[in-house]
Image 1: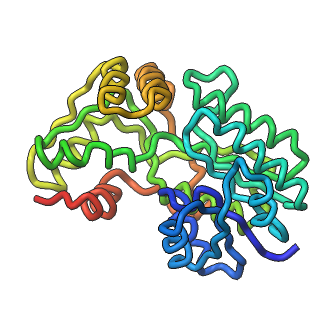
Image 2: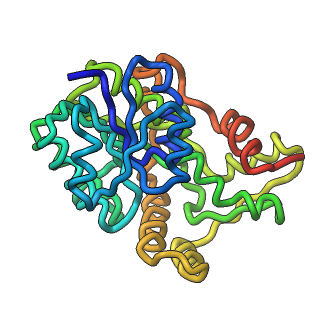
Length: 291
C-alpha cells in the first residue's frame, strides 16, 4: 500500500490545517469534497480533490481506492453516525489499513449530548472494524470564539452558556497536528486520546486575555443553557444544533470538561497552544478585531 491518505471534512478548521501540515510529507493526500469552492481550497493546499458524499458509496469507493489511511472527520449533524458507518464500510471494502478518527470529548453511548452519543456509536464501530485506528477526542475548540466576534467588535462583550465552568479548551491547529502525527506514525495505533489545551479556562479568563490583547475591557456575560437553545433557534438555525449546544453548555457547567492531558506534547513534541497565542495569531487576525 502506498503512502496515501484520504481526508474527509478537509474544508473545516481541523481539516484545512491538517492539509497544511501534510503538504510537506511525502504522502499522496486526497480529499473528499462537494463543491468547486472546496476544490479550490484543497488544491491550493497541495491535495487532490475527489467529488463525493458520505451517502454515495460509489464516490467513496473511488476516493478510497489505493488509500492506506482514512482521516474521518464528520460535521456535527444527526446523520453523522450513518455517514461514518458508510465511510468505514467502504474503507474495509477498498483495503484501507487505518482510520484516524476525529471524535468528540468523552464520546460515549450514554453521554450528555446527542453528538456525544453519535460519536460513541462510531467509536464502537471503529474498534470492532478490524482496521487499525487512532481516535482523537478534542475538548471544546478555542475557535468557537469566532461565534462571538461580532458582539466583541460591536459591544465589547460576548455570551456563552457555560457559566463559570473551567474547560480544557484546545486550539484546532493542535488537534490537526496530532492527527497528522497519527497519519505519519503507527506508534499511537489502537488508542483513544483526549486532546486539550495547556490549562482549564473559563470564559471569564478568555475575556481577560482578550482585554489585554485588545487593550480595552471585554466582558463575558453568562447566559443559561436554555437561553443558548432559544437564541440559536431564534436566529433560524437548526434545532438539533440548538439542542446539542444547550446540552453541552449544561455538561460543561457540571465540570465535565475541566481537565487537561499531555496528548499534544506526547504526539507533537511541543506544548499545546495557549489562549493568548490563539487570540493573537488566529482570532484577532482572522476576525479583524483591533485595538
